[in-house]
Image (cartoon, rainbow, N blue to C red; front, side, top):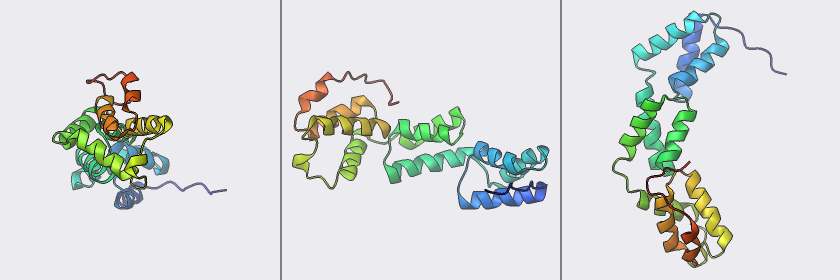
Length: 179
């Protein structure tokens, strides 16, 4: 059983917050939650967050932009997944929306889906890729979870699939975002 963490005074709380940010970038809301668990006084939380913001250590806009850029460049995820991940990290809606829009504004989503398929299914020879119906359905679900829209997924999968007619049954709304 873990012993309870001792509560921290204002300066100790600030030091804890700096160490926490040094380990991993966080949104203000994520850090606020951590500080709530460790603060001896509730009033010191806002003081610490204010100091961190003043020193430039804590900036939700910069965090969201860097996070979105990282998700695009490293993981090759779609807009919806990145936006959902930012909201999970407790970034406010307008800040997250702006960061994702700015990051993905010049991205060709079709090329991104193709690159994602090539990366995730690189061990499978192209001629056997999506040969079975269940493989095609699994790939479709995987691409939805990766944040891509159906309107982009279906045409790309049709090019890769052995039996592209199966994808005709999927209703595609070109304006709909992935869930």
